Length: 364
Ligand SMILES: [Zn+2]
Ligand SMILES: [Zn+2]
Image (cartoon, rainbow, N blue to C red; front, top):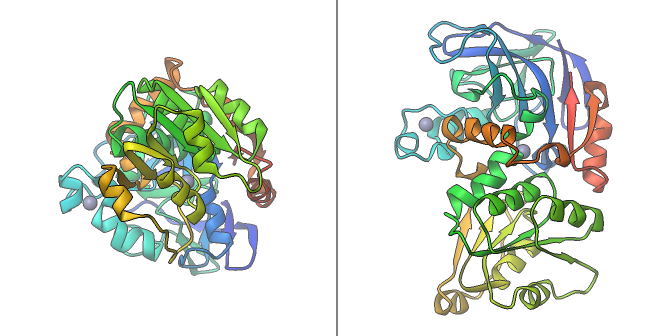
């Protein structure tokens, strides 16, 4: 099959082999794959991932083969791919926090393999790694059963790809990580795919004010369309936390950092109102440190919350998000800036990197 590989230097469209699904695995014909900042971290060398790999971790498609022992999926099912193919048996899965699944954290993600420690991907007989257990920049994927979430078949197969990462992460940050209290105020720093999903989550959870913060005026315009009540266009030299506080003088109850640069994480904490929570949603490169004043944090009764994958419970949250798309509560089409063939993966990554693109779909 055709797939987009990365070997540490080059992004290339290659012919790779995909083995049959083994016990507990399914094969999915990919309908669409979203291009996300976590794909950029890989090609910038900011995260240590096993190479070479087939890129992509957001996607959707149709199940076309099931391995032995698969009980929840059948051929023909429409699915959204999840990059937390949770084992369902470890301590964290049993506690209802599958985004921290031990098997995913210790085997699937760091080693670029599936549950049994091997890859289904190869080229010329040499193994190629899976990226986050997904590798959706390809015509097909083989994933653990729990990495393909069955959703209703009347939903648009390309659009729902976004639910697998950006939307699950953004809306989940509001609902699952922050436990958002209706009537609270919110701000979102960074209005890309995840940030716009946070804004929609805050709208659905009845925020009394939603402040969108970005350096790009067109992204703020879209943020308003999706639910932002206030906007802040960041300009060079601006004191961003003070500017945010001035716009929402009653105080920010939640500030979501959807960028994950050290500067934006620190701004998120500094902008908080009394009793507010800063939620770190965007992911920085490995090994960095941010600063905050613990006395201020303690006296103001504030919280800093880390958010992995929106603290999502994939089997519970992804079908609900697709329902909300179909009822019109979630607008995902507005977040899609382009639909491109798989061959254009490299230029799609470049457009995301430059800020020219929002969410782009690759259509194998
Ligand atoms: Zn992602
Ligand atoms: Zn687990």
